[in-house]
Length: 282
Length: 243
Image (cartoon, rainbow over all chains, first blue to last red; front, side, top):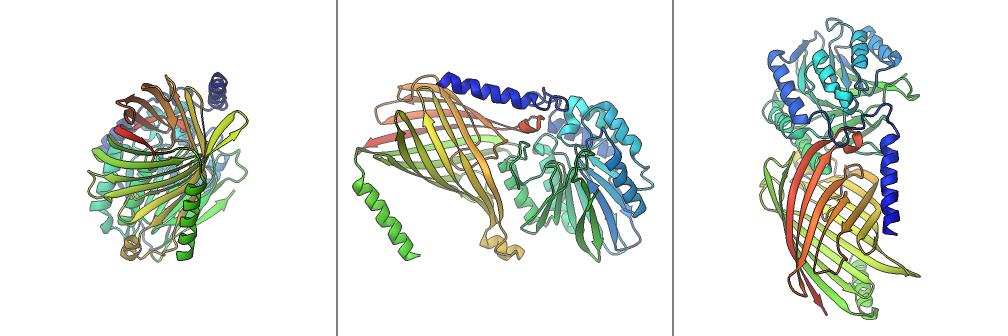
């Protein structure tokens, strides 16, 4: 009886592991290519040479376009997103992880489809898929840091946008300390604060994908409340969801990937100091 | 409210009065010491658990204290559980109803309730069942940050599991084993964040057992991008008293 249960558990585990072997890195559930603290050190190194971007706008009203889970490969929806951002005069585009499948060619395809930063500044982050097949190496070569911030300065206010790396399922101790430091010491200098990161924090539905451990979520929720984080924009789950907890709006975006029939991206509209969002279906 | 409490108390007494078989009372206490990606150094928790078994029924209750992290509440958790043993032909199992409160912040807390199905064989123990989680804001948080008091967030149909293997049979004087689970006494993780422990126990005398566990937590495993999260060591004592 016990042997039968054990065999069943092993069988289910093998099936799960092999079920997505074409796009999944089978090594990474056991030994990942790198840990978050190592990546964060590299991101800090990059940040020390490349100062955080301050985007100056002449109006108090502006728009930021953001998307997640494009899983390049295919780039039809990605190009729709980019063209829309350009034509609407977005001040920035944020790509919240799982931009690619981790393969080097996908990173190059993604990069080649991007406009120059003079047209629309872009801010990518890694997701778990971007780390497969040693993808961080390719990401870092092309884009550098995945833990950074940028600001948007209007004639009357400055807004803070923080980009975090949760590709490994956790912020890691050093990135968390960095985030705490920013929120404790700098948050009060900004009108609003939005955090972008790949992993959705809450689980509105049953899925096989994972999120930060509950212990980590406890710490983050406390920080978001204490330091008035207005919005957390995430992806990963592939299905949109919105929730408000405390004074923070938590948004999970749809996957932008071409095969998703419900693909969409998000427009963040800052108007008269108010932060609103709209999903744009493709 | 008083009528409801009165009814529950009478029900409890009735369960005691009409149960047959021996009763067993068990108290245990343990400490956890460890660190993880969010603990900002070492954490130290202590817990006390009590269990009363009479006939086929068992009541459990426990509390947890946070001893080191002064920015978090001292009284950090409590749990209650009721279990009923059921026998169908030669297969025996237990159905448990549980409630857990986790006070992780001065301004927020979490509570979970769920149902567990438990069965044990010679070397294996299995627990499975759904749980339902709610995050809420304390009165202090509501007043300090002017938050709508009805602002809660729910996560429904989380799947709890525990699979434990013991080298020897459960009633042996000593034992070692392994566990894969997403649940602990005062925290229920998402089903996609499995945790591992190695555990051992030693019966000092008939009523007294010492135990020790080493827990390892990783993040990102189900995202196929695993990362270290934390480690802690637990040791404690169990005292069983037959009434």
